[in-house]
Image (cartoon, rainbow, N blue to C red):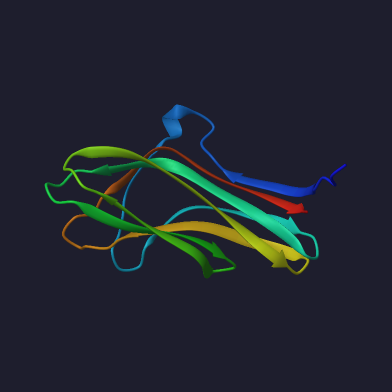
Length: 136
């Protein structure tokens, strides 16, 4: 018989209706905060972070974006996404496990910035950003 983990807390940043969908052009220098929430974490706990949203490229050239998860304003994970075609609409989804944390309350955020100043893609659709604090 295997031992099951225990859920400590759950946080989310999601729209309550489709009319609250996001349409956010991305900045290239300072970045854009797309969502944030806080979680309680037990000693030795882990947090599973997940993000899903749409990315629209309105320019003729391909666009590249760097997305990051941050904990207490410090980047803990980043991923680079690119679109190869103009006027494309892509679904972006990724997750990350933040592990072996001391007991505390943590602020988590999702940020993004366009790599090129010439082609700024737009984050669209309902943006779903969530996290589950657990002890495994």
